[in-house]
Length: 334
Image 1 (spheres, rainbow, N blue to C red):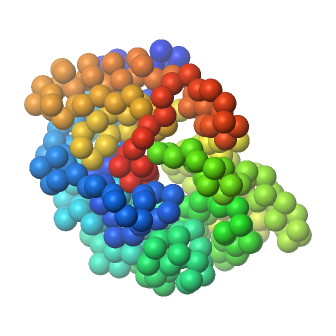
Image 2: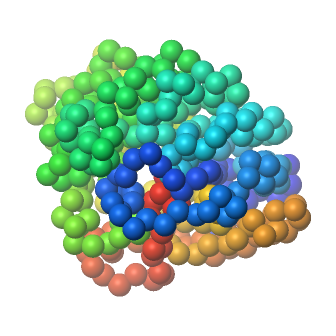
């Protein structure tokens, strides 16, 4: 291995999130606007071969973990072929996927056979009407079918990502934790982030994750700290005593985990983002045929990475040190 990817604060980066598309079969309210979204034309999206070429540069630099995201990555044709290409690169130890789960029944086994090791499924409500509202038309039963397909395919762990929103789904915290009691599911409660928006609507919907602990107390559950499944990332993990699965808290706003950040992002149109929140981007697609230039650009991107993202200042309407991104989450990669 050549010199690992370190930023100016000494943080080693061994994990990359790669968006394969900015398109999605849903229109979740925190991810993209209901109308007026402009998607990248196909020729502006990185090919699988370009992504694999970049990974062949990053793997010797210590990047061993890859997460494929979108948009909805499964709307990209033959995604399993990209999984296989990445899995074939020496040094890659873990390949995961973030999906809304709707297309998993026809894809889970193919992805597992290609080399996918684990999966995160976005699910913000178990109620049909609420799910339809937050996704602007999605059907929750299809997601539940996708969870079953992932389970049957042997993907492990299976994590369910729930973005908590005040006045919308906070009354379902108990129901989500209950999913972990008898099955090896791992629920992750995530604070609502101001990606591409720091409006009063976001501030009104923001809910700190301290509410999860309160619900556990109200339910009379005995809770214990838990190491959590592999690839647990920034989550603080717990479980109900005696439960099969776990639940965790990911709180980027109220208690950021920037000090231990180990991740890079690559957008579907080929831009390196060393931090999810800030606007800094570096176009690697234009040099993808030059491995040395690719390596140097990733080092340059890390050299500009700030110590933290300052989302809490956005919540308080305070001045920030850098310019927040105007890209929506679907344009960056979840």
